[in-house]
Length: 161
Image 1 (tube, one colour):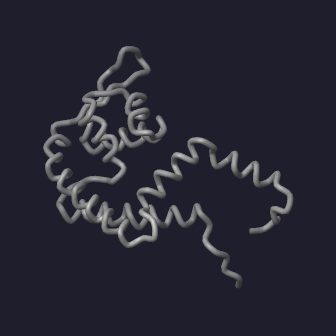
Image 2 (cartoon, rainbow, N blue to C red):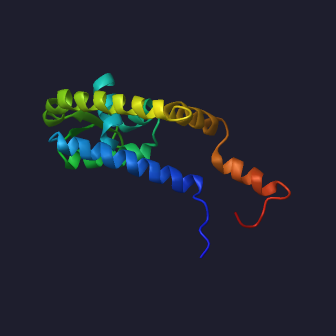
């Protein structure tokens, strides 16, 4: 059996699994019923106040669909409340009293998570946070799909990795 090197996608999924799993475990240890994916939504609502999913999507830099799914989960968990917007299609998201009560404990967890991320960055040959930001900027300029199409058009690209 030949074991092929892990590809970029596999490495990134594994990295996110390692990070999110431990962050979620830290929330649980702190007695918080919280998922890491809720944090960008909460932070946007803390910063901007009530907002539409579209506005949050733009502010966070995450797709409308991803924000909508996260907000739905948060609503099921009693963390946000939905209000009608200016038209029938728009929904306005507001923090629930339950979420507001959690904010001080969450801020403590975020500070600890940021300190742990700083420690991780210090152990690496280049800070992960810097590399991730640079990768996002580069992919915003030229999408990965476009890069794949270009590679396929390049003579000498092998049929198998």
